[in-house]
Length: 263
Image 1 (cartoon, one colour):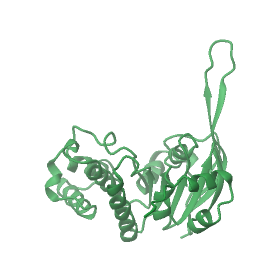
Image 2 (cartoon, rainbow, N blue to C red):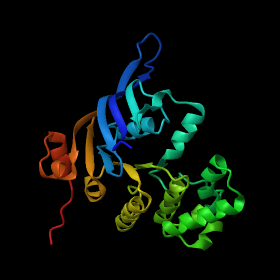
Image 3 (spheres, helix red, strand yellow):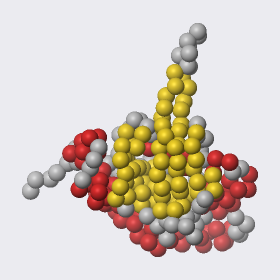
Image 4 (cartoon, rainbow, N blue to C red):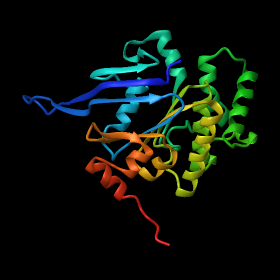
């Protein structure tokens, strides 16, 4: 198998905004000719401020939206052309952990149903097999078995994010897109969730695409970093290259904005 799982080439996403009667639509270039690779088994982080295009990139990789131009190759195949059963198989391999652990879980469903839904929809497993798989995943993310029959509102933000992580693992994905998975959590809980993600990566041989605006978080978890600025890539490199020798002025400002505790 190739070391490259994703190869993004000249990716574009433009949106037309209606400016009213008798006026030409305005074109907003959310992404403009970005190119990067994701290597198997690594954590590639995409960082930048709100509106820079990082979440749009994630949506295109997940095939939630379609690109205006460019290629997204997954294991050598352009995902922009897949559909039907091929698309279903692709989505088993590429899962997502959402930013908000409060709005990403159905408040009317119990934990067991939330985690088990991907299995019920995409496999022929029996109810007992699904329950056993869900309990196994709950254990792996640090959840107690008696959480199975509880509702999301009974948990803290960090506990809810563990539910979301277990759901993302249900179908044995190869890639997990983490869309700002700790930004809504307290700082003390952020470290716990990040360490859990790293433990799961090693145990399940996962590849992460980690979306964040927080370089201090990215420094802890990443192998390589892509810095985005106004829909383009400002620079990319290893953690050491980005933090020790940032080339772009925007990257330098991001690093300079990281809080330093003076003891």
